[in-house]
Image (cartoon, rainbow over all chains, first blue to last red; front, side, top):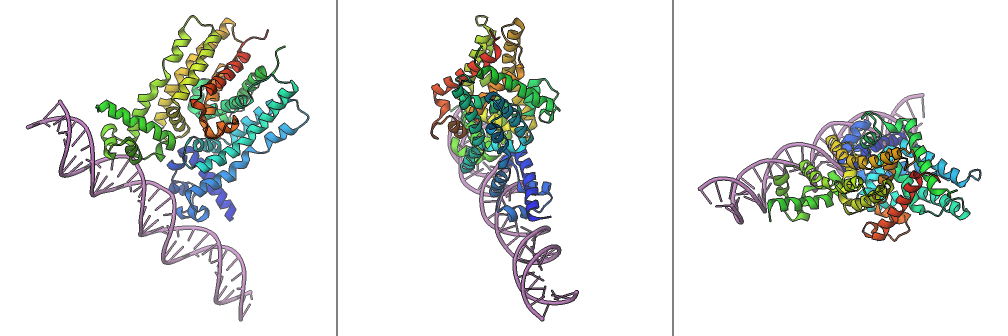
Length: 208
Length: 208
DNA sequence: AATTATTAATTAAACGTTTGTTTAATATTA
DNA sequence: TAATATTAAACAAACGTTTAATTAATAATT
């Protein structure tokens, strides 16, 4: 196995472990056992637990980029269509990358490793800007009513995060049995997307 | 100082510490130093770190109860008025109790101490039910359009949680300087409340 | 192509700290 | 005097990390 592959292999298990136990709760020994490598290899490759975490963030940070930007810059869509496409695309992104996204959330809530917090903000912020630009453009052109754009963004992303926060709470709210995994069910993604699109449309579109 | 007072005193500092560092990241020695008591006192009073955590949850769990229920059961309000009052009331609640609420969020995201997760769900769920009943009643009476009630709840609570998640991210989104503390600013609470009320009204009210 | 020299990868064991917790002695209160 | 509260010290376990020895792979030299 190549060096890069081995690093990636460790990082993949690190995402799982950090998502389950948090940074402090995850031990190098546990990680090594899961990844099937010697404990010393983690420090050999990454230097320290903290640097491993940073390497993991850097490796996975790209998951947010690209797709939203393409949608927003595509001249073939109306502003409302862009918002709707962004909603669906963002749901897909967060659902598939939910473990890493969970790690980012954990780290953002804690006031340790503050420099990492700034890095995480820089990862998430571009997505907000993309949505903001579409909202601002729509309002300027009169396609949208005058709304509190940052709050609309908080609502879109916050709604998705809320169902991602806890599978147990989500299932209880949605009246699903406790073993159900909503994030793997395309019907649930569609349900969330439909709700958000209807909600945001009613909010943004001028009254007839 | 009375025994109960001393316990409460330790719990108060525990909320702060757990909110800052998470369960695993918080040490008994750090807690004892902050609370100004001997390290052994924590185990003397609570038995263990884990039992201290549970005692803290039990002590603070009541923060969610009461207010929302009063609003929902008050016959003097229309269904929309109830929703609007619940939104403002819930924002106030979460903002003032944000540190404990942050601890609950952290714990809910991790897959350790699963029994505690169930307990936390039981703490938060009643609030959801209160909102759900109002929504269902309004839909049944024709005051509201047919909407996805659980998703509407996820949106209301998720939006508030999103701005509570990270002060840094929130300030960046809202174009505030990084030292600003939005949760202590009544204007920010009002801004969030106004947004949510406008959003939910547009979503719930039938088109003219 | 075979052999040697060099570097990289891997391992088990140990290191020093920190952790939650307990103990045994002392002080305080009832 | 008896129960409770408080303390400093010690305990064992787990932690991240380092070491020193060994194996594997690569490069250089004959």
